Image (tube, rainbow, N blue to C red; front, side, top):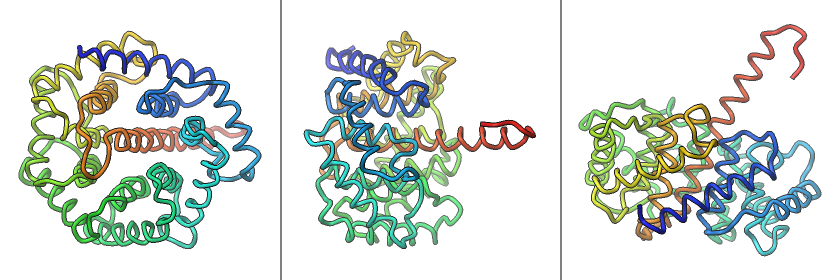
Length: 333
């Protein structure tokens, strides 16, 4: 294994331990998203600073604010990485208001979009970016009204942050989706294919060539009897397109990384399973070997994917728990 990749794995595991100390009883996947944020920044998570940021967040947001709900770990981790956590929070709050105020983008994912804008220093363009994202979403809904849901918000904002026009963005997504589904006949559900199409569209280059490389990566896992996820995990394949390795070597590195992660209890089969472990290993390989995209850095893409996936799972878990509670008369949560 590449030495830099080995260090990245060790840093992730150390950060996950630190985050777990800071966020007791947290959803494990949200804590993992938080640990990945520190790891992508090549920083060690500091439980004390995270505790300090919790207090800042508590003082500066209302009791029912979405910024205090799950996955607040993502926001707190970003605050902890900032030299001025209070100013960072202020930036996110301001952008957050502009995103949700009377717009279709108002949903549980909009604060992740606000974080994206602040991380890239584009807060002065927030209103313009939100309008662009709305235009992208509107056209996407015409193509796939059922598939385009709240979890697309962060990916749509990621696309809006590129220099591509609205028409080019939607055309790229449409071309990738149709090619993957109808020509490549990729064995995955429509939601997974749409997520991959969105991430592939973040970068420039020939759409079909990018799709072909993603499919080759997926098939290489199959050739090695490794089962890679075909739902939300597919989006991560989009971050591997610019990795400076041939597909066979890349797959071997990812598999070796996943085996190393499995030695930690947070990554064992009972914690997340083989398919999702491969996904997180893919993120680490993407960050270590990935070229800096002309559009967006790999760390930004990986953070976005990780946060969105964690949020999707957190929402699913919350809904399941609430339904289970409702089914049992007199059962208090």
